[in-house]
Length: 422
Ligand SMILES: Cc1cc2nc3c(=O)[nH]c(=O)nc-3n(C[C@H](O)[C@H](O)[C@H](O)COP(=O)(O)OP(=O)(O)OC[C@H]3O[C@@H](n4cnc5c(N)ncnc54)[C@H](O)[C@@H]3O)c2cc1C
Ligand code: SF4
Ligand code: SF4
Image (cartoon, rainbow, N blue to C red; front, side, top):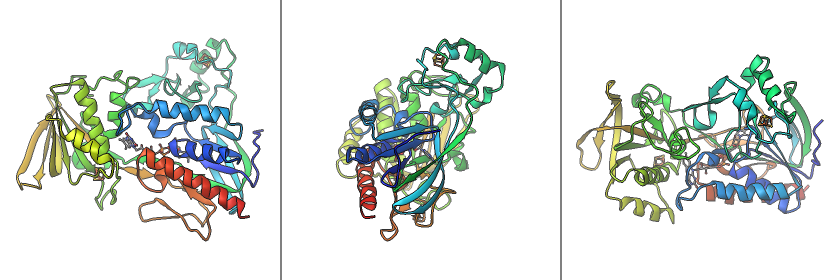
């Protein structure tokens, strides 16, 4: 039986990324009880997977850790990982919700000693690194995971591997009898902060993602550059582990395109500029070419663009790239298209190509009551007449972390107001 202090004065926050954590903390610090649920085994969302933040180029772990400390210190927030919202009924000020908990098979006694992983021979694709490496099926999701606790992958449950892990655990932390469970809550308001997924680059067939090993996506680049990533932070070609000498970025990969994502994701120009700094930091001689349609870097972020542009080894080419082909022997990639400034044809060869794919919002599929409405692209809109469920962060629009934090604070205030009005 799960115990919370939740009632119709409480707020449910769905999604434990930067937006959800911010909304939960702001509401709790204003005196409201909050239940925060996250479907991953850890909090932090996409930001936890980044090497650095633009524009300051600092590691995101600092900001996340401050928030996790605030969470630990605030008894008004109860959070659940591996938890999803499966049912919502009721009305603003008085919702009944059902939450599903998936089994982790590891309880709070886990000390992260790692003995279970040592004896476990079964491996899985590492979800944190977008499958670029393998991890043991008994694993810590990443080294800064919060909560800091191991997980057993469901694929080994019922096998000898799981029993071996349990026997290796001196702390009685592995419980192979854990089952999926649900619990019900009454809450007054809901904040939907379930964030975004990267656009599926394999749908952009003419760029060969999934077919050519050295075509990667921008989110994979974050993991390649991270010290806790699949290569220990060394940016190398996936096909042969070679150092890179000449890297291309293709902007708007599948974005601003009626056949894929019709909208601009707003941050992927800046993300590629940030990635150019990752490469240049490691390889003083490496050439970087950014093929762009338009550069989106507004307000104070324009300064970051100006700074990256000053690097003589980073080239910005206004263009439309039609397709990529691969030399099977070398793994090199030829990019073809048109320079839209000069009208000249482009045919250039690179070691590696990074596709700057956009952000797809996670919708309240299957659980959204009628008052939840979306724009044409799937981002939540607010109907002030019926408000009680509020979107926060990238469920409302694709944007950067600073804007998500402001937006989540606003969502917390709106949720509080909707409860106070009843
Ligand atoms: C390549 C790239 C680089 C970027 N770099 C930067 C940068 O340097 N600086 C910057 O400011 N911004 C950057 N961004 C933007 C940044 O990623 C977003 O602003 C940020 O992730 C938004 O946070 P969020 O909490 O709204 O969403 P997310 O980070 O997506 O968090 C949402 C959370 O909700 C969880 N969730 C999803 N569905 C459910 C469900 N049904 N139930 C429960 N939980 C659920 C998810 O597991 C996740 O933990 C970058 C984006 C990209 C694509
Ligand atoms: S589950 Fe047990 S063996 Fe595995 S890391 Fe935790 S305490 Fe160690
Ligand atoms: S931010 Fe840049 S790369 Fe991303 S969709 Fe907009 S214009 Fe294209």
